[in-house]
Image (tube, rainbow, N blue to C red):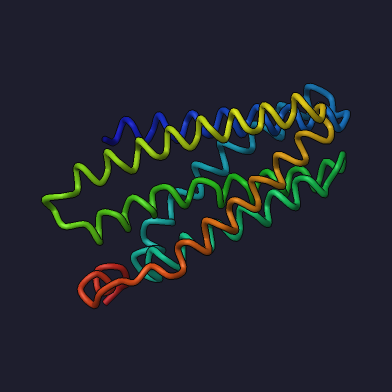
Length: 189
């Protein structure tokens, strides 16, 4: 399962990097600036992973998942609204990388916490199947939007659609109820 998670994250990162780089090119940035801004993305992503496990053990999985989705939506807004402002684009990509890949490991930890051991393998198989299928459908949607609206408008619209999807995802996590046994596993003693 671990290799599937890494593959899914890498695939999503490549998709987001492509969309980001294409958006930056549409804003008129040079290849050098695009490369520097794009390099910040995986670096921030890696750094964000260092503390999130311990943080989620302290505050709980659910609040961190909701914060990751809300932060991802805000980061997309910063990125789109920055236009060709390099400092704003740096901030947007830094925030996007920081929040974007926090949610997947937390969702997996939450799934592990709330699923009986006998059902975990099947639960993770379903989780990754849905992740790959939905990721593929999102890529098709973004491609269709960009194809029909052109790079400048299409990419902005794609990022707005992503931001709305993050807000919807956060709202889906809010009503998840944890029984007392699950809740004790999700926060520090």
